[in-house]
Image 1 (tube, rainbow, N blue to C red):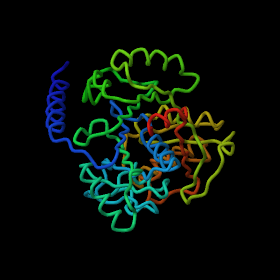
Image 2 (cartoon, helix red, strand yellow):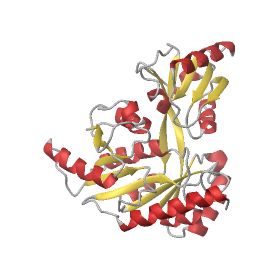
Image 3 (cartoon, rainbow, N blue to C red):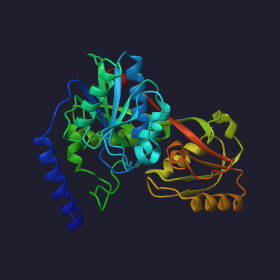
Image 4 (cartoon, rainbow, N blue to C red):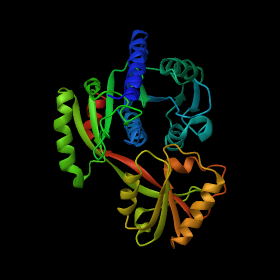
Length: 337
């Protein structure tokens, strides 16, 4: 372990120790979804899917989120279950995207998730939303939020890039040592399509060295449709044979590229920015020039990136691809049991 990893580990260990000593419990059940690496494992589509399934099964779910890079100080509502109450800049990319997708499901932003949960109970009760035994808090990106007790911890691990170089931040992408996989109650190996099954099987063997008790599932993030920046939608088959130029600012641009190619489009180029990149008008203008130079008729990005473009002058030929979390039904049975 190098000096920078060691310093990170010291800070991580101190934070974990003091957080666990001060851990609090909400009066309703809590399920956490998170990862052990920095970067994209598909937490947002998984959170959306689990929340929707919980709603279908009669629960009253409420999402608690840190709202990474969101400017609004919590606790506050991103949505009360109808429309987004904050913009992407204030809410953070992922909460704003979830608020646009989910109906009938409150989303509360707050660095302290216990405080955010108690805020939700009080404020929702005041507007007639009666908490009951069926109330359920879903903790977005919560595997390292030790200050709040969880009834179940769901850990997402990417099949292609599970642990980067197996080095802690800032040298590698690990947020925690691999031994902490032992805390997970459920492990989901994401991006584990048929072509990656052998990779997933090998990863399962390694995961069992750290955690022999967790239920392990494999999942895919499948494209569902295309969406214009004015809200219009197109089916996946619409993309076949069309010339696209792609851009994104996410943790796993390689996965985005593979998803696009699976639709049958002709990908003329792709430009990747750092994760959570905040676009400026010049970026859009430069992307448009590059697309024209490569004879691309359409600009395509992720749904998450599209939220960061609000307020900019967007070209008419800009679209986003939306993703759904696809997993064995038994995952929901076990997670919501």
